[in-house]
Length: 296
Image 1 (cartoon, one colour):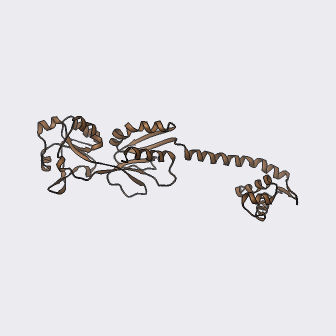
Image 2: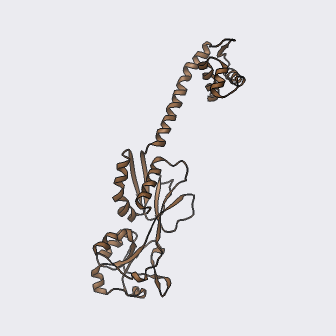
Image 3: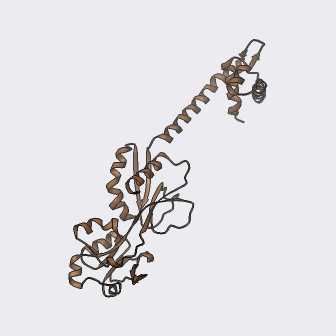
């Protein structure tokens, strides 16, 4: 059976202090407790380790062997403690971030250089998909997710709200006209997602009543970037998050429509991670950076 570290610590303190009384003061124990622990260690090893006298303690041959060999144990423990402290302070290693594809491309990619410049010993790996992933299986540290979140043991911090905007290329509107009321969508080619039903009915408000308007067309895709390219090409109307199409709206490449009927609700985006306690420095640093960039 391995020697308990507590007994070994008491033995070392007795040797270094020169007496049980001094060792007791050092360890905040009573002299009798120190004597009992040393005697227990001797019984465990079946060897006398210390010669006791009224004046001082002295090592036996067995005691000296234990003292010299035991130095390595405490040196290793000190080294391990220092390594853990270094890990708990330094932002380093690999951070794996799962994100919605469009948010990663249009928001994270332009900002991540500043984050890496602050933490040169850090590596960031992105895992991109519009669906939630298993944190353990994919070794995810942080996830950026949109829409309603499933119940789970993960912690979700709201990052921002993003409006969704219906828009089209000027060329499409010139050919087919601009929809004036929600019912006009039935006469337009609506570019839509193929896999997520809550994105495929477009919420609009008419006469004070919000309703989900069916939006159908002859082409769809599972990624917003493909829908964006289709809209840019003039194939139809599209409804995408504002952060996704911001540059297209500013440049006039896409034109918003039915703005007077846009539903006030905005889709929240969350930063999701495991637990609140014992977060690694890299996760804490990334959460702080996300709050700094997008929290306002």
